[in-house]
Length: 331
Ligand code: FAD
Image (tube, protein in one colour):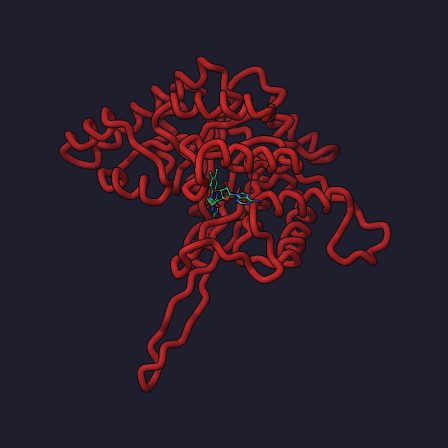
């Protein structure tokens, strides 16, 4: 039914994820994928999506990966600096998957590495390809920077990116001499952090910044992964108390390896509950860890669904098996 609606709608009005989340009467299923490493075919993306498509995802997000700098040794010991993008292709993948699966795709767009003009051009590409849902993010500092440094002439915070997209939705491009410019129709999501963003001085300040993104025109929030539902419930309560009324979508990641006990807190600045880490530590191998991770994530999802969250968003990180096993029991 939902797919039929999409096919009809591609010819009329494109699907807006914020509207889907506002209007749904049951918890929706969505997930996030990474573009393949440069050189790999798009089939690797389809292989990750195919096992999940029977659960009728409401939307599929595609992450954006900015450039990294590497140094190559040259003659006389000189080092040459190269900029490489290991996972290019976000825009093309979004268009390909919404076309192939007749499911809305959400393109992640970041401030880092983009001037405002490059951002505008990326938005024009997305608009022409019919990808009208974006998740507006700032991006992390690159490895050689301690703090995030915007591109010269680029957006500094996600809120600035949201404002730029809203301007385009009004037909206002950077060059002010474009006559009769067509307005775009982007639906904008933003990120939220149940355990606070690592750079925010405190939760109150972080929620004030989050509200600024919503006031600027974002229509919904997707959260960073968390493993303790109480943190999500507390976060939602703080958002509501601050006057944030848009849908808030919890992000869930099933743990799959012992190493993730160290990697996830370091990368995402989150805590793992003792009960979970004890169970993972007691596993004899990663096959057992996967079972523990799935069981934990399933319990989280059941409780979230009981509390009628609009959608559960899974971080697949290129591995769809665990998400498939969970989705089979829920959607
Ligand atoms: P912002 O909302 O700009 O906030 C960044 C920090 O600045 C926060 O501490 C905030 O409190 C503070 N702040 C905001 N506005 C102001 C202001 N005006 N003055 C002072 N302080 C301010 N990264 C990628 O590179 N690619 C991806 O595809 C990607 N996808 C993601 C998806 C989700 C659901 C999430 C949760 C994160 C994702 N990230 C991705 C990571 C994200 O880019 C980082 O967490 C980044 O550090 C912050 O991004 P943001 O959009 O939340 O930033």
